[in-house]
Image (tube, rainbow, N blue to C red; front, side, top):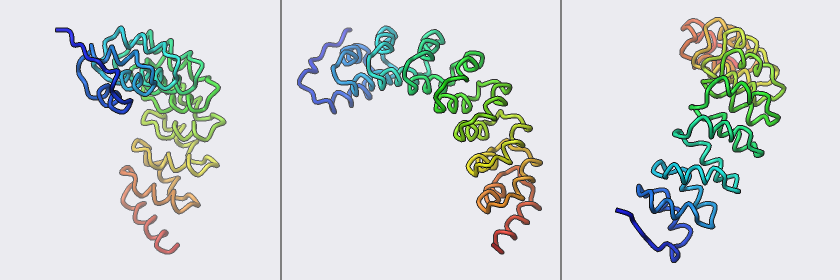
Length: 220
C-alpha cells in the first residue's frame, strides 16, 4: 500500500523529525525532495530510504547532504569511489572513514591534499599497514596522531611515533590498546608526566613499570 501525506504545512523541525523516525520509504521519498537541506540530510541518513532516492541525494548540491550519504554503511563501492573524488573535503573524509571502503581504494586517496582526509584514512582499519607506515611520516600532526591510534599500525611505526616531537602523537601511542610492551617501556621514560600517566593506564604495560611510573608521579 502506497502512503500519501501532505507535508507542506509541516515545519522544518517536524519534517526533520519525521525523516529521522519514519520507516516508510514513500514518505522518505517525498521528503527527499524537500527544499530544506536539513530535511534532505535526515532522509539521506535514514536506513529505510529507497536506493533510488539515495542515489539522487548523492548528487545533491549541498555538501551536508552528500556527506550524510557517504556515511551510510549500505552504499556500494561504486558510489563511494565517486564520492572519493568529490570537490569537498568533508565528503571525501566521510568516504575515508566508511568501514565498507576497500583498503586498496583507500590507498589511492592517501595523497589527498586535505589532512582531514588523510587522517580519516589513517583511522580506517581497512587501510593497509604499508600505507599507514607512509602516513606515520606525514607532515600533519593530526595525521600522525591518527596513525598512532590505529590498532593495525606496525610496532616499528609505533616505536618511531613514540619519539615524535608533538606531545599529542606520543600520547596517542600510549593510548593505543595494541601498543606492545617494548614501546610502552620507552614511553614510560618520557619527560612528560601526562605521557607517563597514559602509559601506566595501558593494559599492556607490565605491573612493575606501572608501579615505577606511579612512584615517579607521586614525587613530581
